[in-house]
Image (tube, rainbow, N blue to C red; front, top):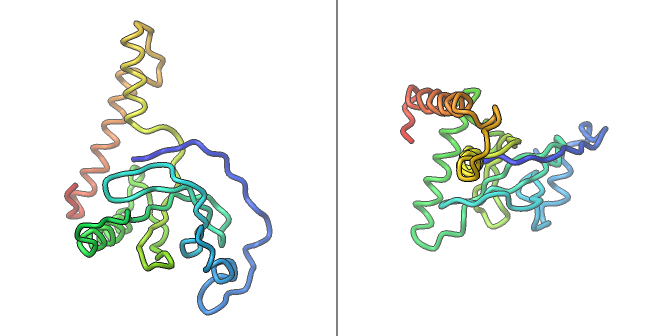
Length: 173
């Protein structure tokens, strides 16, 4: 689960723009812009994984920031990677749980590569939190409440709840 702290800047009054051929005018006008993926303007990478890159993006129709995951340009088995990526998006979109990041939409780059937008989660990753715990122990510093064993167990239980929910829906991770 990736997380990042960002401030949101919203533009007012643009929600009433007319639509053109099923797309918002913003998307239509910017479709040739390389920083656009569907209706999302890519602002910069915030994380990378084995299959894709997650970027900070701005939804030009709803004027909100989102996380946008795009498939890496994988040289081996592009069709297999693409199929898995699309399946991941479709399965994730079916899961409605407070500890699973909601997926907003499936989009395609101008080259036809899939991407999906999801809620931008603010904060730090579990990995970052655990590194801070190790650092406190190594420096023999007392742990603040946010790094306490009780808090770490609460986070772990949330992860277990999300995985159990996904399993109950037939998803194996």
